[in-house]
Amino acid sequence: MPQAVSVRLDQDALKALGQLEATGLTRSEAIRVALVEAASRLRDKRALAVEVAALEADEADRAEMALVADLMEGLRAPG
Image (tube, rainbow, N blue to C red; front, top):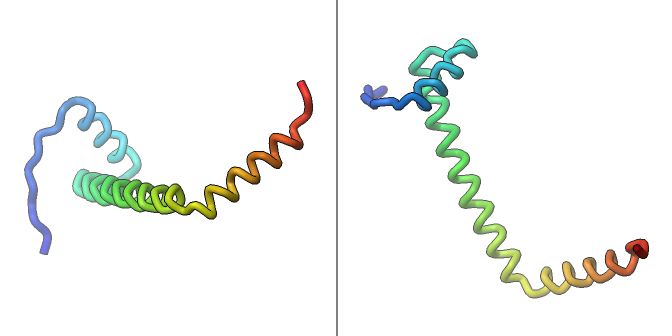
């Protein structure tokens, strides 16, 4: 069941809301879309951070990256 929420928007938020409304979204749609997308970006950032930490902890992967880096350095043109 939908729930009404009241917020106070500063000038930057009002400008952003206006830009979203200019795409044809209603005010409510624009706010809902923005909230869902912001939460999704946060989840994605957290998932990426977990993946990076796992890769950094993987000694075999780190060793392979060092090998590839050495190989690439050896293939680089002089100068």
